Amino acid sequence: MTDIAADAPAVDGPAAERVAAQARRRRTFAVISHPDAGKSTLTEALVLHANAITEAGAIHGKSGRRSTVSDWMDMEKARGISITSTALQFPYATAGQDCVINLLDTPGHADFSEDTYRVLTAVDCAVMLIDAAKGLEPQTLKLFQVCRHRRIPIITVINKWDRPGRDPLELIDEINERIGLRPTPLTWPVGIAGDFKGVLDRRTGNFIRFTRTAGGATAAPEEHLTPEKAHESAGIDWDRAVEESELLEADGADYDRDTFLGCESSPLLFTSAALNFGVNQLLDVLVQIAPPPSGQVSVEGTRRPPAAPFSAFVFKVQAGMDSSHRDRIAYARVCSGTFERGEVLTHATTGKPFVTKYAQSVFGRERTTLDTAWPGDVIGLANANALRPGDTLYRDIPVVYPPIPSFSPEYFSVARGKDPSKHKQFRRGIEQLEQEGVVQVLRSDRRGDQAPVLAAVGPMQFEVATHRMASELSAPIELESLPYTVARVIDPKDAEFMQRQHSTEVMTRTDGVMLALFSTKWRLEGFQRDNPDIELGSLVAAADD
Ligand code: G4P
Image 1: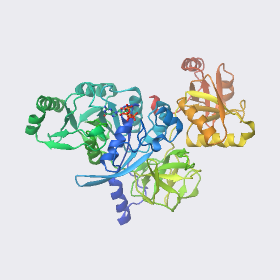
Image 2 (image 1 turned 60 degrees about the vertical axis):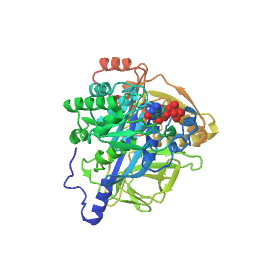
Image 3 (image 1 turned 180 degrees about the vertical axis):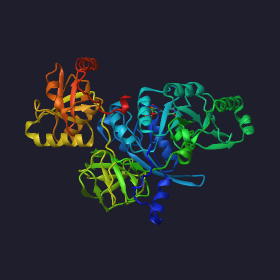
């Protein structure tokens, strides 16, 4: 990590100390998981426990629960998946620490992993949620790689302990062996999976006994019992938990701050999000050990400390969230300083002033005007048409944060407007989808401007693009899929040569990057063998690691 350099902005004085104190209160994190591990349920439970809502089910809208922003789109409703991200903010106090939690929601489906990646650029910590019966699943692994790549500390949560599942020691071994992350359990379950009585708090040695509430709709009452009382209450289940906890201790699996922050170990907890068991413990752990904002490293490699003048970067742009607000919101994470609505900032990409009159916070379906924000917070800037993911905003002392890398697309389709008279809307719509990062847009002289190629990491991005073009951008499109699955960055000087190759096409992305598209990985490898002098660059991809 880069240390604060000598030329970093000055951060002294009472005002700076106030900002630093607010930054220390913030915990900004996201939950990463495979679909169905219980992310939505856990999100609700966390908010419920922090008393921000009174009944579980108010944020996410599955199975007839009250619906909210996470299923803003008809498509999401029909499929019951969450495509967009929201930022939830709520206060939480425990043991004398009074914190503000920012929980950034990530889309669950693998097709939207680029979106998830963008959200992960804006967090200081991640909660890796695992289904007790399934262990590590493909999407969990992929997202874990992103976190490791970005050096985001991870708290592991083994969920659904109220259902039959695997042996806890076996799950610990799996995490250790398959991904090389050393779990350090903070709690240990009392009762096997399917018979969740409570947890052994490994830091105090006490038994936290949980009691079910009807349908898990309200926070579950819990009692803290001494080991003696625990034995009386849970008998052999308690004894087994103590024995296993001692085995873990002998194995060196106790919490260690340095290796946690260094992404080598992961504090671990057991929960049943559906029954609200273990959720309080997770909130307490977030407050006690999750890192607060520590400043962001600029393109020049200097870390701008949280107490420096205001700066933020846009990690997501999203439009049409709600039919009653058909506008575009740019979500920015505050990296340093205080945000005051109405202030004029500088948009680093264009150097132009940016007025922040329409700042909002978004909580579920509700949007409220946001007047002040601090490092770690997320601000929603409405009608911010100039902003794109990766852009920096600052005040007083200039800074530019690194762009958010785009993923290597694997699906390519030509888009054509269904109604030729709507050419203008078509062009504007495609441009908007590209700016929001819904799809990447490629062009070539050969195909012309009327037939841009949409490129995506997963095919559902195309569904979103088609839906948006028809329902919101008034330019219905049809897509013709192309037989390519791999893209590589090429030097423009090689473009002509590449274009002559069999089953390869050269296209230019809107940001000017030139790409060669290959039908298969084998064709690409064959080409590389035959043309070792041609340099082919990879588009990022932490996710492909
Ligand atoms: P996701 O966002 O990660 O995709 O998962 P979600 O919370 O939607 O949970 C997926 C299913 O798992 C839901 O059941 C949910 O109720 C259930 N679930 C989540 N956490 C727990 C838990 O701790 N214990 C148990 N037993 N179940 C859990 P569903 O049948 O798909 O929906 P629903 O009718 O229950 O809402």
